[in-house]
Length: 81
Image (cartoon, rainbow, N blue to C red; front, side, top):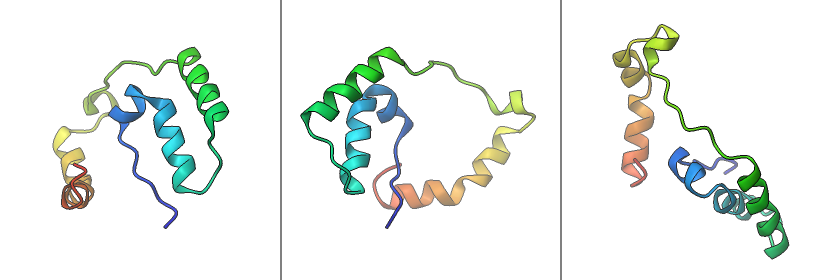
Protein backbone atom coordinates (compact mmCIF):
# COMPACT_ATOMS: atom_id res chain seq x y z
CA UNK A 1 0.00 0.00 0.00
CA UNK A 2 3.03 2.30 0.39
CA UNK A 3 4.48 1.59 -3.04
CA UNK A 4 4.05 3.48 -6.28
CA UNK A 5 5.78 2.43 -9.47
CA UNK A 6 7.02 5.43 -11.42
CA UNK A 7 8.11 4.96 -15.01
CA UNK A 8 11.39 6.71 -15.72
CA UNK A 9 10.12 7.90 -19.11
CA UNK A 10 7.17 9.60 -17.38
CA UNK A 11 9.47 11.16 -14.80
CA UNK A 12 11.73 12.60 -17.50
CA UNK A 13 8.81 13.77 -19.66
CA UNK A 14 6.91 15.55 -16.88
CA UNK A 15 8.54 15.39 -13.45
CA UNK A 16 6.06 17.83 -11.91
CA UNK A 17 3.11 15.66 -12.95
CA UNK A 18 4.78 12.56 -11.51
CA UNK A 19 5.51 14.40 -8.26
CA UNK A 20 1.86 15.50 -8.08
CA UNK A 21 0.76 11.88 -8.64
CA UNK A 22 3.08 10.72 -5.85
CA UNK A 23 1.61 13.34 -3.51
CA UNK A 24 -1.95 12.35 -4.43
CA UNK A 25 -1.22 8.65 -3.98
CA UNK A 26 0.14 9.12 -0.49
CA UNK A 27 -2.30 11.79 0.65
CA UNK A 28 0.03 14.77 0.64
CA UNK A 29 -1.29 18.18 -0.40
CA UNK A 30 -0.49 19.33 -3.92
CA UNK A 31 -2.56 22.35 -4.86
CA UNK A 32 -1.92 24.79 -7.72
CA UNK A 33 0.87 26.59 -5.83
CA UNK A 34 2.63 23.28 -5.19
CA UNK A 35 2.28 22.38 -8.86
CA UNK A 36 3.84 25.72 -9.93
CA UNK A 37 6.74 25.17 -7.52
CA UNK A 38 7.24 21.62 -8.84
CA UNK A 39 7.27 22.86 -12.44
CA UNK A 40 9.75 25.63 -11.60
CA UNK A 41 12.03 23.15 -9.85
CA UNK A 42 11.83 20.73 -12.78
CA UNK A 43 12.77 23.47 -15.26
CA UNK A 44 15.75 24.46 -13.09
CA UNK A 45 16.91 20.83 -12.69
CA UNK A 46 16.54 19.04 -16.04
CA UNK A 47 17.02 15.28 -16.02
CA UNK A 48 20.26 14.04 -17.53
CA UNK A 49 19.86 12.37 -20.89
CA UNK A 50 22.29 9.48 -20.97
CA UNK A 51 22.32 5.73 -21.18
CA UNK A 52 24.82 3.44 -19.55
CA UNK A 53 24.89 -0.06 -20.97
CA UNK A 54 25.24 -2.83 -18.36
CA UNK A 55 28.73 -3.63 -19.63
CA UNK A 56 29.95 -0.30 -18.20
CA UNK A 57 29.28 -1.81 -14.78
CA UNK A 58 30.74 -5.21 -15.62
CA UNK A 59 27.32 -6.82 -16.05
CA UNK A 60 26.07 -8.74 -19.08
CA UNK A 61 22.69 -7.72 -20.56
CA UNK A 62 21.45 -11.30 -20.11
CA UNK A 63 22.12 -11.01 -16.36
CA UNK A 64 19.99 -7.89 -16.22
CA UNK A 65 17.20 -9.57 -18.18
CA UNK A 66 17.20 -12.56 -15.81
CA UNK A 67 17.35 -10.39 -12.69
CA UNK A 68 14.35 -8.29 -13.74
CA UNK A 69 12.27 -10.99 -15.45
CA UNK A 70 9.86 -11.34 -12.54
CA UNK A 71 9.43 -7.59 -12.20
CA UNK A 72 8.80 -7.20 -15.92
CA UNK A 73 6.21 -9.99 -15.79
CA UNK A 74 4.53 -8.26 -12.84
CA UNK A 75 4.46 -4.95 -14.74
CA UNK A 76 3.11 -6.57 -17.91
CA UNK A 77 0.32 -8.30 -15.97
CA UNK A 78 -0.82 -4.88 -14.82
CA UNK A 79 -0.51 -3.25 -18.24
CA UNK A 80 2.49 -1.22 -17.12
CA UNK A 81 5.32 -2.89 -18.98
